[in-house]
Length: 213
Length: 213
DNA sequence: TAGATTGTTAATCGATTAACAATC
DNA sequence: TAGATTGTTAATCGATTAACAATC
Image 1 (cartoon, each protein chain N blue to C red):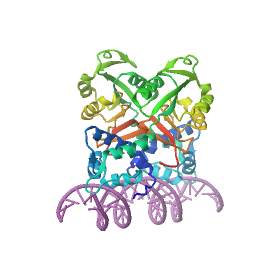
Image 2: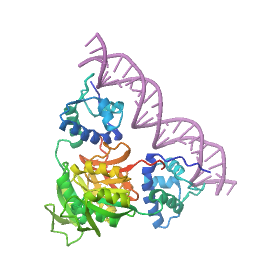
Image 3: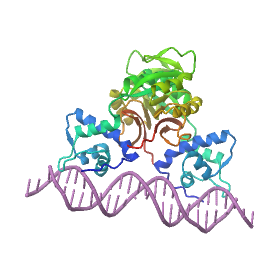
Image 4: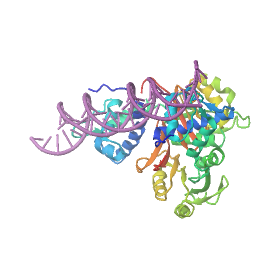
């Protein structure tokens, strides 16, 4: 019996990659895979695969045979997507980028529902974006205390990002996806931020540190 | 005299954060900063700051005083942006997301110029996006061998990403910014890919490993 | 059975942090 | 000078890799 140790951040970051790769295997009808083969295909080591699997739960690997693809996917799905409920997300900023991203969220992601959109321009308020009425940013606090969105997608200009991210953190937003070219990790040290850059371009993803994995 | 050791990947990843923070200091008129204070403000340790600075070049810190903000910015700028020339970038996929991202590149990033845009739909070809005429994707090879773009921004649907990324790697593209919900690191192990995910959503940035830092 | 592969412990590697002499 | 701070070496910490008995 395994006592799954809490997965470290590097392990957690590898999980989506396992998930997508195993999903591909499942689609081609492969039902079982060894750590050695999985590692070779994914460009890592068999040791790492086994170490990783040992902290995510009861993977039930069978000596001489390998792991059940289906079983691994079930475990990874529950870790990555929880109970399958979509996280309620709100969009902040409904300009060109916000419009495209709202479409991206509603059509290309499985993990979220967009429940509201906010903008500071009176011209945009009342208009519809991906089937959702745009609200004025002043309604943010009232809306959040009533509907408790968990994720905020920031599509505001750089200058607005700092102020609005402060409000969002205070409102208990769990994570954010930030397209504002602004580094959110400085003001909120308790929030993990993944920054992605090429030159000085920045896109970052933030989430609160949870107690468990 | 310092013999700057080659910076490791974790160090490199921290550079943009130093850059942005120091830029903010410069704007408020601060000309000098100690590792201790910089670390406190950025949420790291003074040791790490000094270790990092020691591998990026001749930072010329002065005992008892600290580092010159301007000097640090100069060093970081040259590392992050090279000679200041904008990297020629091409956009693949001119749908809703592509349109927004093209705007984002031309207005919010300093490191790139968008030199071409491609789409597979004949309806889009010939139209203009952020001031650039959309070409048919079949022209990709010819265009690249003539103009040698260094970065590709992928805004195609997930299904198209694998095939087109293979073509781009063959064409010598140095880096890509990928909005296609597709993990590029599996097929190209020599390309460093930063994946950012929240649930099953994926955005990734890829770049070829260079010999030097 | 024999070959393959797991689960887990030990060894290695690398990154972060601490310490401190040098010196502004 | 005395206090502050660097540059750099040493110590610690954590993650990755190797090894191997257990066993399918």
